[in-house]
Image (cartoon, rainbow, N blue to C red):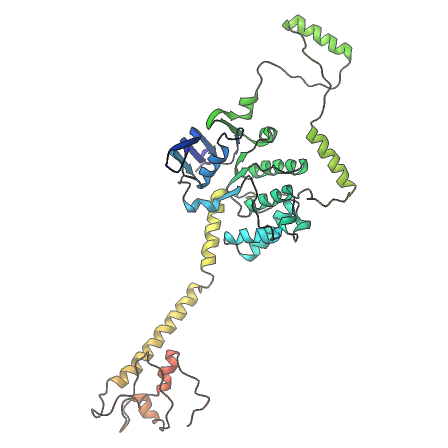
Length: 430
């Protein structure tokens, strides 16, 4: 499959998606989502915007399979959202982080990693990388119940990434974060998009969505009011912006005269250039960190965790996961050549047992009152006796003079081959 077709493949596809909430009598009480059509393509950051009550969280819950749609079609990775097989490919950060308050960050991430069946070595590596990435490595042994909301959100983001998901769903990821954390999350999303992740971002902070999303949908009253790329939706066709270094007042006057003469328009306003508040704030923080100022809060995060799809094609990544699963299920299996040797040894053992058992069973008892001493293969071993062992001739051929059934074969041979021979080294009389 070509790269272009891979990029165009929809991860989520909704057609006429509708969700009605009903009361106890199954009467329609509210329509949260009303016949929306959209798709989220592979390897894009998709924004879901709208005021409170517009249907954003309901749409996300239907994508996750937590709510069933009332009407319409919805598929995730080409399957029904309720299909369990797609769950391991999704990472989810809910609007509120619900974490076990008595666990510390390391225990929390270990717990979620175990839910995905990850091996111990993989868990340790990923937990260390994620804690460093979200700036919580220095509080890794503090109880989560002592965390601020912003620190809990950082841990929730790490939890959403523990399984290296192909599709990441973030509901208000910057809620409760300080400007440093908000800036870091936006940089992280851009980096994850660069690494091939598909991301659904729902936020009330429009500046965050504008900075990172490639396409977006704006909802109101459960319906789509606008959708498209940031450039398509935000372009202003009524104005032109020219950015220049600082000019003298006389030069600005000449420009105004030129515009009036050539275009018949006047310069509407002249303003000194100003930086964004986020840029100014981050500059102050960087200066304080350079001075090594002490802080008890979360640190600025480190590099993006290496395991998060870095340079890995999604198809080969899925194949790698399947291979690891197969290896994990076959950890106790022997190599093929060893399996063949063991099977040959077992066959030889069965042949010897059958030959020995057949030799004794072929001779009928000497009298009706003399029972056979050969026990069936599954019977418990008989107690040791004081009888003398038969001669070597009788033991090897089964034709000793006067030998009765059961005495021409050493019983310990059969019991030993069966593996249920008791320890006769103690208490056995010759």
